[in-house]
Image (cartoon, rainbow, N blue to C red; front, side):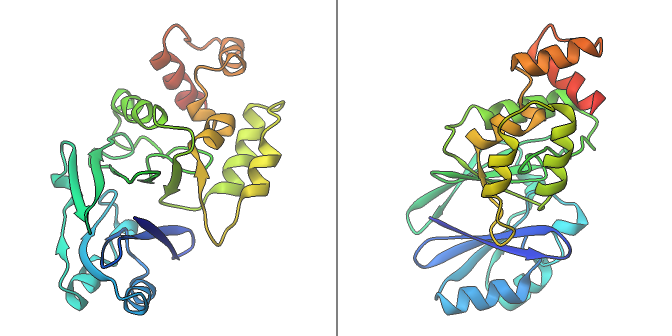
Length: 232
């Protein structure tokens, strides 16, 4: 199973996940580029879906559905774990609420498409208001192997790492992370994220000490995650 990334608007990232013959378009705002890629590679776009229903992730839905025979999968209807077969390979789809109540993550063998739940270098705003649900979602993602590739919903890398540096001024991994950054293909590994993404580092001693200095609760993992989200 392969992933092709498409940038659209200022910083949005959409995807075509595909096997030898069929694919699923996710947050596919770059309609013309996706159709051209699919035609060139003889891929049938069988499904169209989204990581969540915010308007900046859905603008390509209607056009793709009109120009292909694809079936629409409404992310709001994915309320439990599901699977989708693409040419005999399995793509997992599961709820990761927090940024919004309808956020969904897509998982292949060695990658995640995380939308606005987990970015490269940061996490999304908790527009749902449910920080505990967001924490559970993040915990599920970071429990996966460190080699898992993270494909997010926006390219916020440079500004995210600049901000992360203000939180952990002595973190030695920031420069290496930026050297790997390629705006033509925005991807990192989970191991990379655990080294630099402050919102995932709630179990590191440096972050715990940081929060203690700010007199924030640190007694449990959730307290620490909540403290980071509230302070930063």
